[in-house]
Image (cartoon, rainbow, N blue to C red):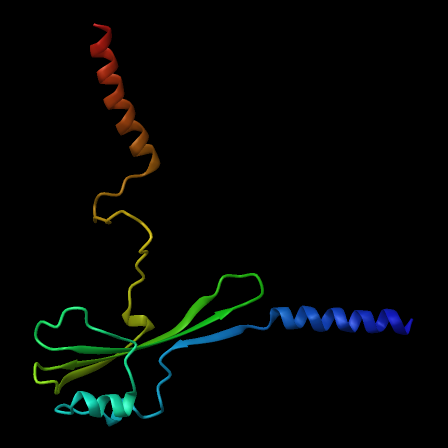
Amino acid sequence: MKVSRRFGLVAIALVMAGCSPEINRRGYIAKPGAFAQLSEGMSKSEVEGILGSPSTTASINFQGDSYYYITSITQGRAFLSPVETNREVIAVRFTKTDQVEGMAQYGLSDGKIININTRKTLIAGNEFSILAEIFRGKGSTGDSMLKRKM
């Protein structure tokens, strides 16, 4: 009786451990109050001294450089795909003389999800249902078949 009870308790413990969420923090981990220390006119080296090295920089240095500090927090459970629960982006824009021109802080609600694996550009107003596609395709094929028979 004791063995089956212990086995039951171990099984319950394993099930409970599998249901607990796994939280992953990736990218830049901001120090509390670091964003508040930034001000316009600071140099790049001062910004790097406060925030550290950026996650990425602007790919085109047209009117000045930009630094981006990106943090992402995901939460997953057992066999489910992880879901991003929080994202923070700190953007620092510099002038051509490498002085801070402006800064902004963006969250998950400010972003837009873009599927980069598709090779299609979505165009508003060009979405058809399956039935519209079937009837549209059938009509054009039927016309060409009639012409061939004549």
